[in-house]
Length: 289
Image (cartoon, rainbow, N blue to C red; front, side):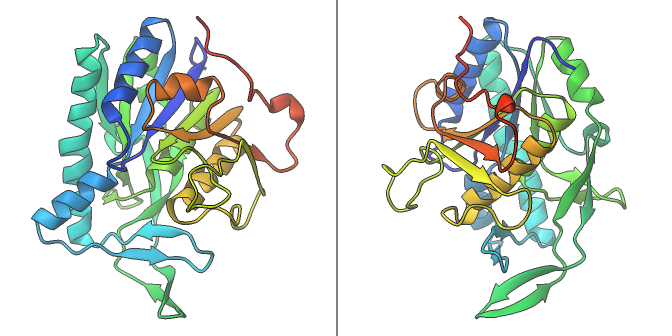
């Protein structure tokens, strides 16, 4: 267990998300005594680099409507370059600029995130469900939290991203939201904040004013029907974190000033596991001064 209470923050890769603002807010909270681990994606940078390197992008739509990135060998190279070579150094430098020591890691470092590669994935193509092979993505199977835990105890902010390492000791792409959830559960985190390019979970994805304060997710199966695309994956990650013992999970806006502080104070959508006891709900806790 990490003391003081640990917050895992996931910084979305949507270009609209204010990564610099998130880092500034994290720095302020760390200087106040908070313990924070930052997980990041990089969809915007992956798209930019794919265009520069002429690597086609492809999205897979699962039968339950959840969207995932198709990661062929060339795309895996782009993911590695974008996350480890571009996004992560900028985040570490931004935290350092605010006087916070940060350490950049991928899930491969120290065998932190072990994943089982999916030999084939089901996707809907032209109305038919097909099996897609040669996809270098996987699902996290085990977490070794010793490395980030040691860094947190030493006063560092770990900055973590995919890829993970598979059963054959090769890099494999994993969803960054689910990586954040797995790390939060393994580290005994109190809170998981998923910061994205929307106010939270919307009742109508086309209406940014339709924010839902609370969403319940079933213990299994497809997430809430109002969530589509990347938001559906966020709710799956939230479910996994809650099932793993994380007390509070929120999906909140990463574009606003002080986005971490606002989410800690209750902004965005609080996700609950259907059937979970009310005693586990800390949706109204405030940020300590």
